[in-house]
Image (cartoon, rainbow over all chains, first blue to last red):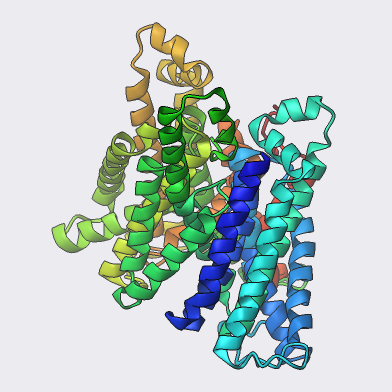
Length: 329
Length: 293
């Protein structure tokens, strides 16, 4: 357990180093987009990977937080950091309401309920005055963070987004390695047994749901400031599908899978932007191929391979202990 | 003319009629979803895309082969149902031993592929389909176009026919038995995998039938299914998938409620079904006709 956590931290440190150096080579706005979606996917993965709940409506938290942060910064003139926090807080409240309704059903029904609830939020955003309808909220200003940090500069802002991402990631990492996270995994593996052991399963699920919603909101609120835009695309069901795809491709229930998945899907969208509707077809095809051929996702398959090699070279009894982060079956 | 609660009767009955028609589509689609889910434990996310394929198939039959509406009403469900059988054999059948969520993800991917291909080919704007039964009758309090009346009666007949087949015939009893204990039914010498394949084809054909019926009312367009399927999911959650008659009743009932909302509080007409879903989940989580497990 302890050594595995350390491994994760070492990989994480490596990724941070990579993140620090990346803007020397890659366009920072693109990197910021990847980081926002990586955080979004990590938040989604907290539910599917560690509680076994498939939310098909996470766009409602991402998109609604984007609207709140955009509106409070542009129209109300709040400071940027307060705007982002406001978006996150509203997403958490929305998560509390949506979660309280959705956790009343399990499995496939949970997915359908979350999808329906997010469609409701979509229509609300379409009709409400403050969201700007089809236009969205455009030209959200990038005012200095805390009055000092000039985030109008993409390079500077990139490091701020990297810091936000790291905070979000460490919260998730801390959660899944806490006693609370162990109970979540117990619920994922065998819910009736967790109930019979005396755990208030619904309360654990709800807390995890709110946490996931808040972090998805943090990602959306940040994204609104990065692109200076909050629009209906962010709350539409296609966005919910995209975050599922990112997590699935990277590896559900792996710590780093969602980051890898977000990187791949965003890169792909970037290169295929000129191909119109083929993007939809290709995304669908990736879904089908991943589900049929490598359900554990890229990171999940690599970990399974590493485990297999380890077991072959050293058939020690302790080797199987590392199966703890295998994807949800 | 008299007025009802401040609303002219023409508007009220007009929306009620439209509500019943939408309800007929909800009923046909949720019925197909329920039949598929009952036997396969797969929520068919492709259902909306298959409804759209039904509408397109009927449009293509008319456009390229000159086959009129009445021919398409028979042919399109068969053609789209056959593509469903191919999809089941090629993809879905490989997932039965896994968690149900993978079935959802797979069919979602298939829906994206189908919708993307049609959008690539035909764009997102609608294609017109001429009304096969023009004209109508003035009932005094409202004008009833023949075709709209036909949709309601026809889909009601199809829904009740499906109910009769599943609940009252020998074939239906096999189906219900296989839903309960597939292994035992297989042991009696019934080919359960083939039954599953045909059931999926049948559910898809129902979706395609709804699409054919919808083509003359709504324009035929590639995105017509993806919005509808989310509403149908909510309908299914409200009704619970345990009961066939329950699905039919919930479908028609919610269509009417939606129509009435359009008259009295149009702002909420898009969301009313989702709000009802949330209320039902709080009061009776298993759905109106579902059984608690």
